[in-house]
Image (tube, rainbow, N blue to C red; front, side, top):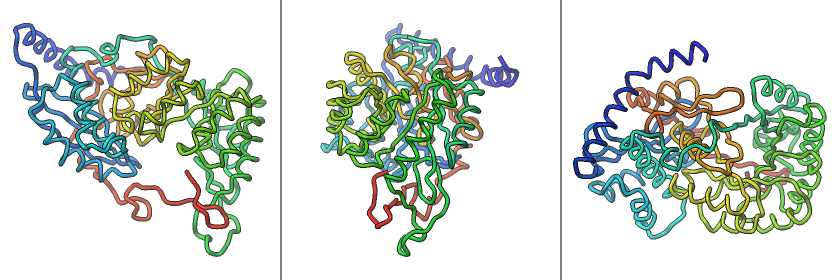
Length: 442
């Protein structure tokens, strides 16, 4: 173990020792017939130490020192999630038992009558994950133990590499491989266009769009397909390659793209279709064997159930807080196992470190785990969220302390409030258009 890791563990030792003692005391209280903890307060930690807005829920109980944290991060509409928690869920939850997670989730899910919206789901997720953290602290166990224990010691993760051209992409992939990554997502820029995850510089465009991001599917398809074939030839067969279409092409073009890269043998092709076009997955399945991943935009079981039950995808990529938290997503993982679908939970920068820990604990406890996106937290975020997962040689390792194993420095988090977004969009995305001015999905 590196010296830096040893120092980090040494710094955490007093807090971890205190947490274990508190957990033991709570276990003894339970054995003596002491009452179950009740929810005393529900608060929100809204912070932006990096480029995205993070929303974390803290639930405090009526038992001294017993609390938990959960991820409610919907960075594009963060300002809406906060009042959903403070004005609606908090009054609904205060005074209720803190140890009845399933019951509480069902009650919150029905409390607004209208279901499956991203704001409500993220708010519920914050509560749900905080209750799982509390349960782990009560038991003196990491959450993965509450889910049945480890199926593996660590979770394979991937990194995303992008470049203005194929040469830059291949060079970046080689660097990632030298850092231990065994899975690499490749994205290439398109000259003059706003390709997903890769810039393309400026080019001539209609006067009306001279200062707007533009994107043309055909130019992207030609460039991306060529890049993937050349990358496979240059990088060899051992490394797992991924690519994200990000729903930016038509369903017909998506079917053709999947066929054109079949011989690249991708680990998976991500978001080939938008949620509105899911039935086209049947056509892709019928025509080629390219592995398919989908789900980061899903909010509702109506979206993921057909794809899983009909075996139309190979990997489910739900954003856990977007679906309502650990409680529903552990059920999704179990459902997927029955149909041969693996998990690949969404884990980019717009997931809080608490959310990344939740992803990892579910990864460790799920037999049908596939790969994990992201999860490496550094810099100020790692200072605010102490005890985050660690990375080594292509794998993420969990902190084995009770709950998520993370303590939040709330005073430091408060020094990084939400900042105005790009062009005053408050964290939201701007529009990308075709050369004729048509808005495209992104």
